Length: 421
Image 1 (cartoon, one colour):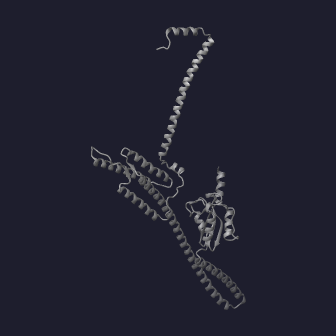
Image 2: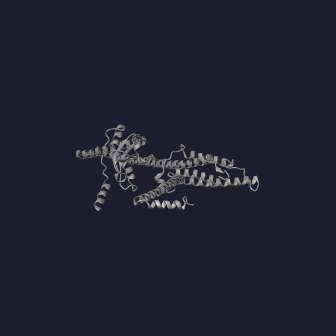
């Protein structure tokens, strides 16, 4: 129904007709402005509504991200953090005992019906006993599903996915508990915590097992090296004693020849030969004494400072020790096919306490080692001047160092590469 009658409308039209063109244009513009304002208000309302919807979507997305459990290996390797051990047992046997204890606690909770919470005030077809059985069966079903998820996480836990496995166990407990919301069935947090403890224990057990494996490997290597050194010393002494016996017999024979010599020239020639044998026997005697000393003093040996710039770059040194009579045999072993170039020796230091000097060097550069996990790797990112300083402080100032590594094969390879490019 119109707000105005016909007479009023005719009057409005008559008045409009009396308006000048400018006044009519102004009136039209006013109507357009009024219409635009209405449209603007409508757009503002739509924008506000869209903002609210966007905020809600972002919140939903953030919640969803929290529930995502990343399994991609590449992503896990890039994103894993430093795991802080929850336990500090010194042997794998202690970890195994603790794992067995945690699993026993889990079994006790299940046996005592304290692993899963549930409301027994249910009836089925009016039967309370059937209602209790239904709840019991549902609790058993949900617990079985949760245990399966936990077993999978524990079986596949590794150094780079421990956090993801923890998240998986907690998320599984939350999701399974949601399924039982209607019947107020949920996995108790105490049981979830026991599963998380089992996960961490298994992870740390694996780490300790690998560490013990590395220690056993290192021990076997040391034992083989000691056996080799012992055999080498015994063989060396046996050869020296055989040579000593040979020259002693020759000396007796010469003494007899000198006594029977008929001319001065013959006697002089025989005495010169005797003097050479006596000198050789003196050298052999000294070598035998050295071998006996090495056998008696198990700490005597060589500390070596070596580098391999073709494999590891500048200012990376391996600091180790060997008790072999020829220490270069050990250096040659290290430069086998496992590295592209041979090692260069910067210093070979014989000392009565090789383990002590080696330990002093390792301790001085504890925070400069390349491998912070396996302490038996003897590579350090230091300068040769720093090594010299520690050697001079703990040994003496007469040790000679080779400052520049020859790195012959590496440098020749660079020349060939540049000439072929």
